[in-house]
Length: 617
Image (cartoon, rainbow, N blue to C red; front, side, top):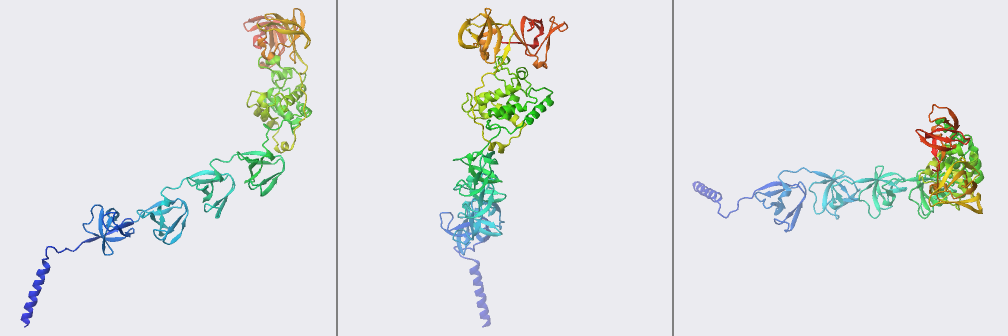
């Protein structure tokens, strides 16, 4: 029996070996899978292509089984919860990948969540421009995985930028508040006017910008900043001036007393309201309660706060510096007196005289007491210029002349304002003339804005000064000739009231004897004495030519007298001397470096021609 059982077991074992060692042709061999990992967050599909339905997702570094030999056409077969699925092979690796992170920046405040969707738990908000870490390959279904405060969260990817924000330097145009959000409900920090701030490029939304101040970032209206620095001008209050916190003028902050300097923002005037700065803060006031007066635009009818001593010191300093003698020496009081008499700023009178006469050292100032170049026409400046009896007379004449003609609104040459800038329009062809005069005024006496803001101009009108008495006399044998197309009307006296007595026609000659300050000229014609006003010195070349009149000018050679020699040689005897600006008669044309002349005493001699000015030729 035991032998039979043993035989039967042996036969069964042998049969079993035969069955399992030789499967049939249609039997399926065991499947082989390898472990792979997701190198990005990815989606699994039911087939090889995106057209198939999604059956699941894998997070980064998730491991799963990939069937051996199943990777083809960019897809791999995997096991997903015991079921077959497919993923793109480019997103899987057979070694566990290491996470790589890139810096991204929220384009606006951004919420972060526990999962990929707003239906998951929201943990909070990340500020705009914050640096956050985005894991490489984590963008899926419009969401990215981030590392924030040591944990993984998810944010909407379209609210991020991989470019660091760019900020430009701007300046606060007013005092304003920086807010945590784009509205006034969350104040963060105060920003003072003129502060340097930074504004984020492209951040303007609904009038608000992303702004950084002292390292603190927030939001404020874009209108509160500007790319250029604020420019301010100093103005001075002309009355007790209240100022306010805004242009509504509902909240009065304080009052500035008359004559106080205040900084006014350039370009801020609107509807008579202007932005000012007081103690470093921005406020608003009425524009018509202040003025930006300086010497260039101060009303020249306001009496000066200068003393005679201050004017004299200025002239004395020039004399000491240059070694030149000025006719203004000790004349400071003359400017004060003339200014008071005619209602003209005495400091202005001194400055204009100093400028026009080279500190009282010009040829006209020395020889004619003409300190202001009055009537010194370009055609014949010395010959046409007025002659004054004294320096004081010249100053008083100028004060009355300027008041009547230039700084009175009814004046013939009124330039639109009773100021240096206004006068410049008609008094001088030099566009910077007013600045030069203002500089002399400033150098004599520093500008006192408070003084000028509180003083009223002298609006009293004065009469036209006419012409002062005075004449230039020519040698009796001075010969002039009337030009073609011209003629001179002659009168018995320097007036037309007696009627014309004679006419000098073209090509006729006559003797030129005297020129008065009022431009009546005494002549001798056919052995008779007459007066004419037909000779216009500002354009005399159209009327006459003088053939033998010489003016001796030693001014450019130190002034004083110059000798007349017996012969045309400096080694010959000196027979007479000629003063600066003395008129003499030409007898012979130049012989080398000399001309022969006759002086007013009838002395005949030779004059070095470098001292000769051929007058009215």
